[in-house]
Image (cartoon, rainbow, N blue to C red):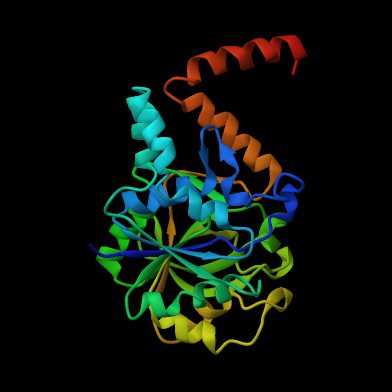
Length: 292
């Protein structure tokens, strides 16, 4: 097992989804029938990760509750003979999966969130998954990256082509292709203006990182927005180690935006084995009625 640990930075306030996120974490917003954070955890689990490290903040207790045992609910379902629902509840946290929670007392950036888990990571490579980015791939995107890590044994960033006008939303990488999907990274810049972006390859919310990046983050000055940026730590790591960018196979839904969140709900509902056919028929009827 190559990557045993994954960090989920979930301390953000989710202000773009207010008032829905006033009393619940944005990571607990449901896409069809599962909260966002569960999609990310299931992706990590499918890639062989068994130690899930959640970097949380205040008001994030529902995430802990979601991955905890719910004795009363399980007993009620068992007594009612609702085995299918009982299986769904128990599947949220498999027996061989460990959940650990670390507080990020101040929202000082993604790099700082990763640094909060430093003692738990130790000297092992690890994954970072941003639940805002719901990734759908076959095999799952992180599993694709773990396979590449087995070959290259270096930090790997998931990337995708982004429109030029969107470069200021992403960490942007540039480098030399070494295969169809892998790029030897030479530069990485956090949220550059389109005129200054070294390419249009934006980093999506999946990373496999070597432990050396933790020292680089810890010694970085604050970057864009006055925050401790993970991108700056990776840029510094480039001076010591190889870093690769991987053009993943799959679809990313930016569920940090309302539009992306709605798109994810519609497309995943269409692909749902039981909901899909009826929902598709409804959308077709709606399209005719509304004359889209």
